[in-house]
Amino acid sequence: MSQAPLSQTLPGTWQLLSRIDIAASGERRPEPSLGEDPLAVLMYDRSGHFAAQFMRRDRSVDVPDGPSGAANNSRAQGGYDAYFGTYTIDDDKRTVTQRLVGALSCENVGAVLTRAMDVQDDALTIRLETTAADGTAVVRTLVWQRVGEVGFARPIVQSMLEATMQKEVIQVPVVSEMLAKAGIPLSPAVKAGGFVFVSGAPPIDLKTGAIVTGDIVKQTEASLENLKVTLEAAGSSLDKVVKVTIFAANSAYYATINKVYARYFSKDPPARTFVTVASWPMEFDIEIECTALA
Image: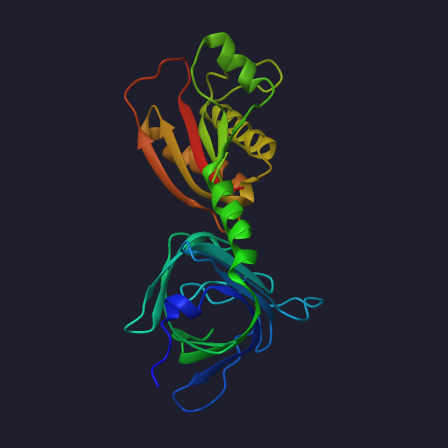
């Protein structure tokens, strides 16, 4: 007797029963951040949207994050993982390809993950090849039980997707007033899609709104303080920054700027680009922009 197509049987809400990782040797290799029996829910609607959440049962103790860059897998952090997006089904191969629009770990945003799936009555089995924390190849088998129909999932997933499409303009005291007074058509920062995008932050005196000129050390400090205050106004912070671009009027400032910059990003610094420009519209020598997690 042939199986019903996945496209007919998969949509619905599923609760996780078990999550087992097996190495080629036959050894069980539990993934330490979530364990073998995390609490989890998985939802697929009939419009091609899905969402998943996993949580370690005991989060009362510190647990390591999931391995970074694990093949065909998302990364749990602090005993928790969540992601959502769109999916397509290959009924012939009985596989589901998931495209992550949003994820707890920024490294997984935009990832494309393919899983072999099988539905028997109200039981869903998912198998995928991935890697353990030490890099060992494992086959992960997840067994789920259907707990709800498709109508429960769609409003939740749709609201998540709609949230990523919205943007919020961030205003910053003193900085916004200075921009308005100068007639410059930009916002200090914009929050969208789980990120904060900060415009180039010039060296502004945050008490007076005046441009800081002269000594490049003082200019760099003022620019970074501007960046810090703008991120905090958006509900983010320097330790959530993932990418920085520094624009400087002279490449000879590089070493001095680095010394100041290192005080603000002393641990796990973000990705960065240093650009030398020929001229400025105002009398300053540095401007710094960044992208951060919201």
